[in-house]
Amino acid sequence: MKRYRGANSPCFPRGKQTNYGYCASKKEYYYGVKLSLILTPDGIVINAGIHAANTADINALKDVLTGIDTTEMILIGDKGYYDGELRTTLANQAGRLVVPDKKRHHLFNTPEDKQLLKQRSIVETVNSQLKDLMRIEMTLAQSYGGVLTRLWGALLSFTFGQLHNLRHGRPLLSIKGILV
Image (tube, rainbow, N blue to C red; front, side):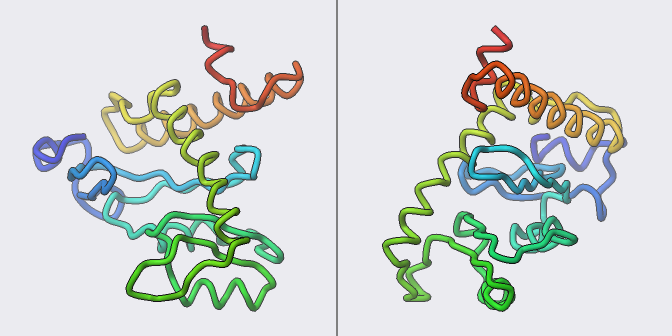
């Protein structure tokens, strides 16, 4: 919800589950939760986590990775996921974390890393479809449990849409074609 409504919401008290956060792409503050996803290269959600909006992206990722075998896994993220400690941990398990380098770190990505970063478009497509088609930003929930129910329901519907597309030989991410 909008920042000015957050403090007055009796349904969503500020605390460990919901809080204020900042969306850098929209350049605005908001109140609520954030959804973290781990996707396959085809765009299939393999794990998800819901965190308070003020949770740092890298901490949310560490939480979502709990219980997942990251051996030989390549994680591709945006600059919010830059973390030397996580990079080292994944490297010890033969995995990798590829993010665009920040100018102040002077670690320039290899040409192979730059090719991998182009696959971020899959992440943006899934995020866009969840926002536009599944309307996850507009939950109209009256409680935190309602928000969780709405988000998990949207992810389940999205996944069933992908399964439908797979069985009918269509591209996995052409979810809009099913709805129209």
